[in-house]
Each structure stands twice: as C-alpha cells, then as structure tokens.
Length: 356
Image (cartoon, rainbow, N blue to C red; front, side, top):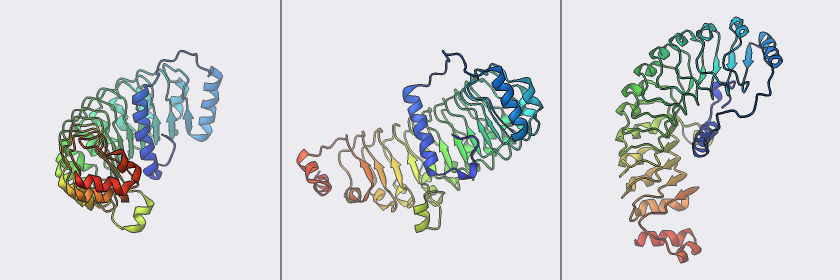
C-alpha cells in the first residue's frame, strides 16, 4: 500500500496485491515487537520536520515513537502524514486539527481507538489504520466526506457503525482479518465502492443491499462462516471491473473477482450464470455438493476454483468450459481422474468427467 499514491489510480493488480499481502501476513504472522533499537535519531526527526515545512509531507515510519513530536502539530498545511511501524497507543487529538490532511497512515501501531474529533479531517482521502488494536470505530467517521480509501485490516473490530455507510465517496474498504459477524444492512449505500476486502472475519450472512453496489469490481469473502450467498449478488453483473481487456470488449462495468473460498457454502446461486463480466470465481474449500450448470454461461470467466468440496461430478456444461479457462482447480472432490486421462491431456480429462 502506497499511502501517497493517487487514489484514482487504484487498479486490478493493486487489488490483487493487497489481497495476497493480507493472506500472506495472516499465514506467516507479522512480528510487531521491535527487538532491535531504532536506527533513527533525534536528528532524523528534526530533518524530517524541516523537509515537511517545504513539502507539506511528513513521514516518520519505523522511528519506534511512543508519541509524535510536538513540532508537527504546527504544520497546519500538511497534506500527507505517515507514522507507520511505531509504538503509538493513542491518537493525539491535536492530529485532528491538521485539517488540510489528505493522507493519514498510522498502520502497524498499537492504537486502540480513533478519536471522535477525527471528523474534522474532512479533506482526508486515504486513511490507513491497519495492523492496530481497534475494536470499534467512532460513529463520526461518516463525516469524512471526501474519504476514498479506508484500510482497517488486521484489527479486532467486532462491529461497524451504521454511519460508515455515509462515506459516499468511498472506493476501497479493507476489513480483512477482523472479528466481524456481520456488516451493516445499509452497505449498499456505498455506491462508489470498487473493492471490499472481508477475508478472515466471522461473517454469517451478507446483507441484501450488497446487490446495490454500483461500481464493485472485487469482492473478497474468503475465510468466513457463510452458509449461503444471496441471489442478489448476481445484480453485480453490471458493476465495475478495471481490466482494460474487458473494457475493449464491453461498455458496461462488471464485477471481476468473487472469492468465497473457505466458507461453509453448500451450493452456489444459479443466478451467478448471469454475471457475464465475472473473470475470477473462487469457491474452493467449501461444502458444495453440486454446482449450477449456469456457471458455463459466465462469458468472460477465466479462472474457476472448485477444489476441496464434496462434488460427486461436474455438469457437462461446466466440463465443456474447462479447456477455455486460463486456470482451474477441480480436485480434490468426490470424483477421481485416472492418471491415464491426465497424461493424455485436457480432452481426455473432460471425456472422463462426462462419464462420471
């Protein structure tokens, strides 16, 4: 994540990279306790502050700071501030007086709550407080009227305030690896959302309004407790993809990536077949006992993962689709593919699958 990048430049490769980063960080664990002393000195802090007076940008990353320097609160014209990888436990309310801020990056600290006065940062476009100790968010967050990216991944958030749905300009909402059992019913009001990262929570269901998200391109729901997907998810067929190659072939926008792996899904809605712009569908590691034939109707599907389910067979229409895909995973399941068929190639594999 580059906190100083133009939010409008966020594209499909960046979305995929953020998702992979979250998965890798969860797998390996992030060492957040600093055993080595900081290589930065007081002189480095003073130099950074001096440069900030000229550039309106201040970066104090990995300084092992327990509190921010007093001098920075006089930088009333500051646009960009980053203090990631420090030892902060609270956000000084004076930070909320720097109302020119457009980017605020406090990732990898130990912050337990955000002050209500953060509502004063109405020019903020990017807020990154991932990898902290947050449990809740202030209801006043909705007053960040220009916010486009909100990064809250790897915290301890158990509930989102309904007011978060008032962030009308939000494009990216990153909530992976928290403790959310649900998301607000009014999530559909975030009509400009392009990416939602909800991997590694405790979601039991999705609100119906999710089908109203007008520009959604990436929906990551892996590692939750979803037993079913609402059929309205197919309403995302006209929503925003960013793949340039797709744009050359079609004028409307489409959901490009749907990741529902590692849940407890027993089936997939037949309506998925109408999602003509979907290019990546991952439904691996669930409890699927069948899949709809209509999956073969997804015209732009390039990647299909159905591995580690309870499928006794695949519909013939889906089997016919396999050779056209860039990548697919269909094993293990409750069927077997003989080695002889594998060695003979995809045509022989498909012929065998049709005989099951």
